[in-house]
Amino acid sequence: MRRFEYFRPHTLDEAFALQGKFPDSRFIAGGTDLVVQIKNRELQPSALISLRSIPGLSGVAGDGVTRIGALTTITGLMNHPALQRNFPVLMDAARNLACVQIRNVATIGGNLCRCSPCADTAPPLLVLDAKVRFRNAGEDREIPIHDFFMGPGETCLAPNEILTEILLEAPAENARMLFLKKGRVKMDLAIASVAVLLEMDGERCRKARIAAGSVAPVPMRLPDVEALLESARVTRELLDEIRHLAAESVSPIDDIRSTGAYRSEIVGVFVKRAIEQLMGWSPV
Amino acid sequence: MKRDVSFVLNGLEVTVAVDGHDRLIDVLRGPLGHIGTKEGCGEGECGACTVLIDGLAVNACLYPAMEVEGKQVATIEGLRDEENRLSVLQQAFVDRGAIQCGFCTPGMIMSAKALLDANPVPTEEEIRDALLGNLCRCTGYVQIIEAVKEAAIRLKDGS
Image (cartoon, rainbow over all chains, first blue to last red; front, side):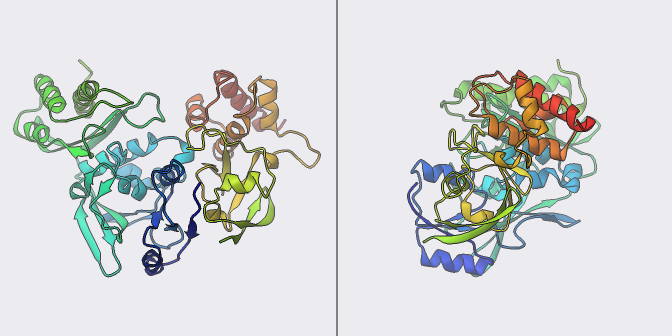
């Protein structure tokens, strides 16, 4: 590997100061993706500035609004009882992210900041209407996660900003949610993934949130499908229409892992399947 | 610029001079001479380099060496006892034919150890999930999973 310096600052201010000193440095969280990118010479930073020793960036806290530190590992998420109880859709994604060795080191902040279209934690956070908070040298900013992803590998963070927290409002009592993912094998990156959150009142859907990964330049919501669910009576008869609309709402590409056509098909099937499961219907 | 990093390796305190770009596996196999840990893909796919850090399985090929400061690191070398006898888990791998070329074995065993330390009576599904990040190109996995089951039984019986 090309040589670089490695720093472990203990405060955010120290981290920003180091970044000022090494303009082509990178911040590193878990590094499970960054180290591979450096090894493959996709990135050649002069220094890595580790965020792992900065207190307060990892862990889960809060009762009204749940605050997840950006440096919380995927295993850290899985081991947190309140998250398991309140946000099962995020737990589904965490459990199915890569393998134990990666989950023990990779962080939720890294998963988001890498901004891969297939980031497993993104669709659940989209359906949960999460907010993300970040800090630059001067101030804190907070934005809805929908505005965070700009393009493959590109977030709305400025180079001198650090994602510090993910904020989650408690879902409604009657909210049901699910994450489904298709990979070639379980530890592979997603060919396609879908997260669904429904708040039902009989056959009426008070709130629908549908998001998909690996089917567009960034993880995305499917607003047309959400609108259809919220405007119609949710019955088995509606499922086929939903499936077609979901498949048509995405714009996936062909790549080494799959074809665009297959990805569209999978998104339609997964949205239908998720609604079936959340409604307690047996599969047609 | 090299900096001294101190950590506990298989129960013994060590201090080693580390470059910024060194990964844990570079330091283990280089200056520390612990060549039991293997590097396969170097990208976190194959798990041959699996070691335990503070009891959790991680890929040593992706772990910056600077980050082990003050941590507990366990490698395959630490499993044998004072009289150089294999651990129960290692012996179960031998007895069940779970080793062929042996390249994946140190990583497999460390992943299995992390599992059994945390969950002494795992289901087959839990064993498969724990070993998902470890590739073996020889055995087809069946013997490896049987070996972990066997080790769990032997550890429970105290034999």
